[in-house]
Length: 314
Image (cartoon, rainbow, N blue to C red; front, side, top):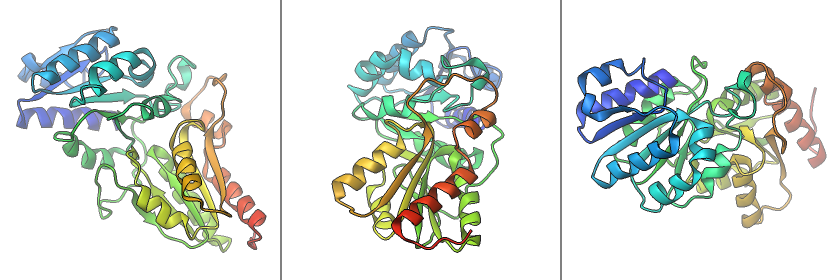
């Protein structure tokens, strides 16, 4: 996914002289051709992320479309004030590419784990947040980023993620993607959690439970109509994300359901608890530890349906 994203930036730059790239010690190898062919539009500024965001904002004020690439935690935690005041306050076409969304940098510990990036950026007016499921979905997203109005945060996964998206489902920034439809439960996902959700839906079907899988590659603005349409007839709603359960997609969906007064809905968020990640290892091991898995989704959904009085065959 990372390589695909940066290759798409290069392709966009070939076709549009407004496109500039600024890196912070990341992406130089992948964008070698960009640096060689368009050196006046390629900058590698090192470990100076706040400066990079300010620099991108200045270029955007002069009519450029700027793609900034660095680690997600640095773009969100370290550069929060610059993102708010330099980028979003002026509603500038700066595209923040956040490497290592969620638990990707598991070997490096909590300083590098972007488990709160969505929650941080959701609070900022004018910000759009996207998290594709795989490289093919990234290919469909990137051309749309060129003329997207205002700031954009692109959350990148690890890379070499299994392809689970489908090109027959129309892709648009701000729109949900219906991956599967069922009458009993609603599974809402974003980013790479689409894969375990689809696997969970298959397993639930064997137990006589039909689940809708609604994929949200755009977390902000959220496709309110799509969520409410499917939530209205679901007996159980489960939101799955590789992010803190506070402030992310699950919080956004919960807020929406509460405001709409959808009484009687059984609801659960699956994600990272409200605590610093205190383990090292691999992304897969940490996702297993926090229950961001197909089996956890199945168990959670079945438990919610039992509480609702829905018969569940196991």
